[in-house]
Length: 221
Image 1 (cartoon, helix red, strand yellow):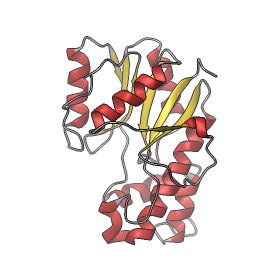
Image 2 (tube, rainbow, N blue to C red):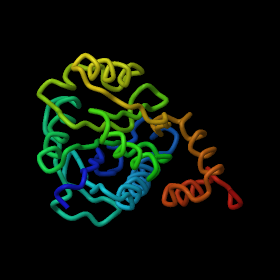
Image 3 (cartoon, rainbow, N blue to C red):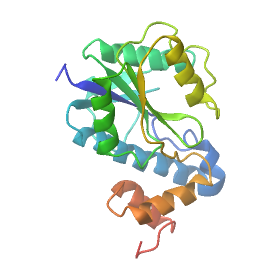
Image 4 (cartoon, rainbow, N blue to C red):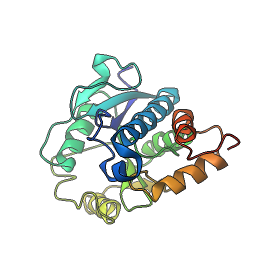
């Protein structure tokens, strides 16, 4: 188990009013928190089903999540900015494996295939990254994470992924880019989500059930 690559899912407890805040105007506090919960459930299930990795919840606080999680799988984030928190979690993962992967819980189109490709590429490269369509990234995997690797980057902007890639290259890392995916963060992203679920009827079952419950998908979709 110790040699399996930890895939660290960065997620807050899905509490009303504290998650998916940019979607509250569209979905309400309960709807936004419910969406966060079901997307986390689908991502957790994808990671659990992937061979060669072990799922870890990298969270900001103790809380209730929609899947059973063992205490040793819960790692609390530490640091005053996202870059430091990422570094700390990735280094903890590297204590027990040759590589560590951080992912978000906002990309319902993430599949086992994406994770398997990331693991395979980490055999050949120092790092692997998956861009999000909004300019961030949904996955970052590394084989080494020194202090300052992710410091002072422009987080939560359209330049986040580009700046992260530039930093890795500055540090001499070889890297591989995965297929870009969409995040669900703002109201317009709900259209992308609906279109994806219609085109991929077996994907993200918990998110699909939620989408049907609010009328984002029709019964035949």
